[in-house]
Image (tube, rainbow, N blue to C red; front, side):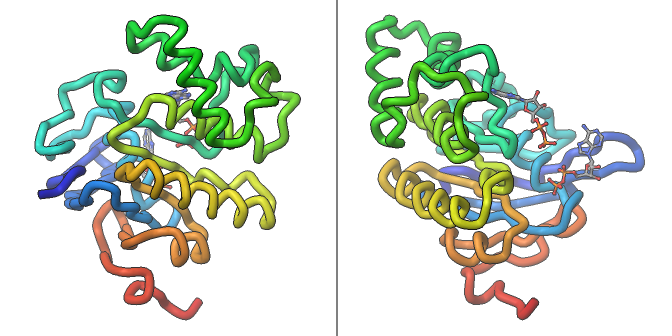
Length: 227
Ligand code: ADP
Ligand code: ADP
């Protein structure tokens, strides 16, 4: 049975703008699905609906068989990583990683601390924990954003163009890191990108979106088109 399931998902922002137009997708547990397609085809909106940052106009979203559309974001156990990292500028890496966990659970401070340190160790940023985002490189900020996501031990991991602000070298390095992390955690993942290389190398399957609809779904090889 699918772990993450979208069924006929639809999001209309207005009478004229249908961002997602009847999208159905199923991911098995631990699968990494890459979502590609031109700008404006509904990729971000789809992720934001799954995360609970937008209310779908209609359709179903289920995790392990349970409908989540009526749950607020903090009750979904979904972690999302944004293109711009969305770190709090006045908080240290430690506070950035732990903040969500502190706010949405009643775990004791000591447990939060341990989990933050475990996440930091996994990402190799232990020595950066007392620094603020402005004093970190792009790749380091990205690792903090990933730390904030994995510290919650999420059921579902959503990545929205996570590498587009990095240079080419760092991009391929981080791509490998994310892939390794995703496999280790065995977390069901939707990864949005417009980068063909990223799409071809990172995913188990690729979903190609067009005008809010699924245009193609398949393995990286079956979806490859000569540019
Ligand atoms: P993508 O991530 O593939 O670039 P988006 O999901 O961001 O696509 O956008 C899909 C469509 O919805 C676009 O036409 C976009 O302009 C529109 N859209 C996105 N967010 C909003 C919003 N908050 N209000 C109105 N229209 C939006
Ligand atoms: P996009 O790249 O899709 O145009 P942005 O990156 O500007 O959108 O912002 C994504 C959305 O996520 C914004 O609506 C913002 O309010 C929200 N957001 C920002 N930081 C966080 C966070 N730490 N956790 C959850 N949502 C956040």
